[in-house]
Image 1 (cartoon, rainbow, N blue to C red):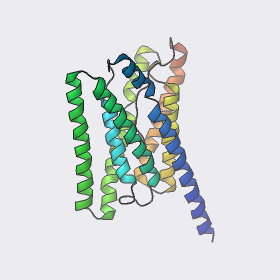
Image 2 (image 1 turned 90 degrees about the vertical axis):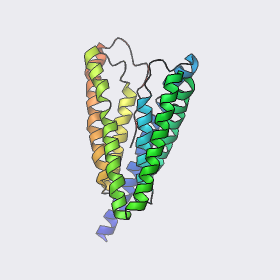
Image 3 (image 1 turned 180 degrees about the horizontal axis):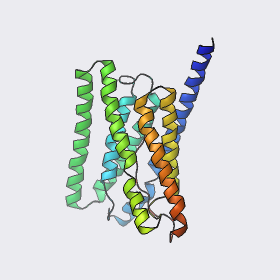
Length: 235
């Protein structure tokens, strides 16, 4: 009876952590809207990089596949958040393609096709070559690699903040929502006993704390608040 009660509590806590992670991830997704509003108004991508959005799309697709019942039977909240994230990244990339110069337009279109093709290959290989247990391992390791790289990507922003002694390009609320999302999915993974979730999100939580520590230290020396957010991908 006690074990059954504890299992129920763990299930409820895990679902609550997953729902919270979805909410914080949504904040991350919409944080790039000001950047793309600027692109549309100026009808130019200026010096903004398309690479973070391409990588975010790939990460969302891999994690979406991992969260589906066909791969991971009890991680549906991972699938929901990354399906929404994939839609946002496709919209952002489409805007990029619409307003980029011809050279970048062709390059970005080719990269988008490559990402979609790679995802199709991952799905095909995981279905045809692996049984259910090995399929979860295969896709899980890919999701860990993509999430860990994604969470490590802000390190170059931290380096910029240290060099310029300004937090202009490290928005506080973006860093905070990244930390909260990572921590929520870390808890979700722990309650689900899923290392493919809690390991990369644990790393994301640590790096999120580092970002906030750097922000706190350098915010007093910044000349002005952050203007444009950097895109990041999730859970």
